Image (cartoon, rainbow, N blue to C red; front, top):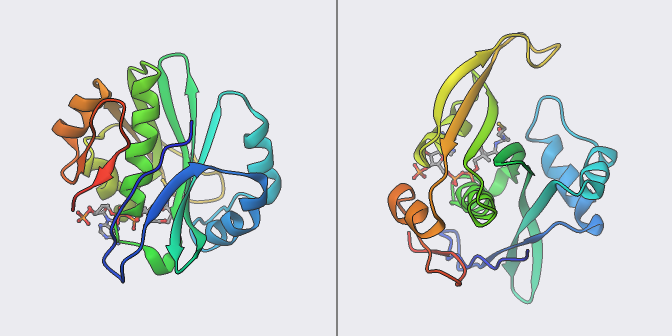
Length: 189
Ligand SMILES: CC(C)(COP(=O)(O)OP(=O)(O)OC[C@H]1O[C@@H](n2cnc3c(N)ncnc32)[C@H](O)[C@@H]1OP(=O)(O)O)[C@@H](O)C(=O)NCCC(=O)NCCS
């Protein structure tokens, strides 16, 4: 599914478009990943995910003049009645503009459209920025996984969100989005 998310961002007037990740996007995605995660995924990790039928990968493309560049990405699995968030990152120069929230809402709406019941994720206990993003959309901490990250000496916090119908989800949980049935999300912040 390719969904266009139109967003007017603060630093200049730009448009954000969320589309399926292509293999040609991987170098840009890996560059973002390297500056975002302590144990970054490699090109091979992203290629492997692209080949899995239950894995969904999207990028957020920011327009600049006539061109576009990849400013963030999200990877999640749709398995049984669950959405499992595996990875999300935004280019460090374009953080705190709402791109992460756009990507996550898009992920949750993909789940809602597939009648997923719940979304789950793990986040480092020291990653407060990500935790605030998740709680701003209604995720709650439901447990901890000690030694989850192998060589990183901190636990993962397990978070969960019960997903409602798409229109209800967006009206009830997201402060800055509207979504009408059959239409793309749009950002009204
Ligand atoms: C987490 C991340 C994806 C957020 O992306 P973003 O585009 O900057 O997030 P948004 O602008 O959509 O912010 C949404 C909410 O998240 C919270 N948030 C985001 N960055 C924050 C920060 N640095 N400090 C505190 N809260 C923050 C805020 O609640 C914000 O809502 P508000 O602007 O209404 O206050 C980004 O910081 C990132 O790429 N981090 C590195 C990778 C990572 O940690 N991924 C998560 C792995 S579990």
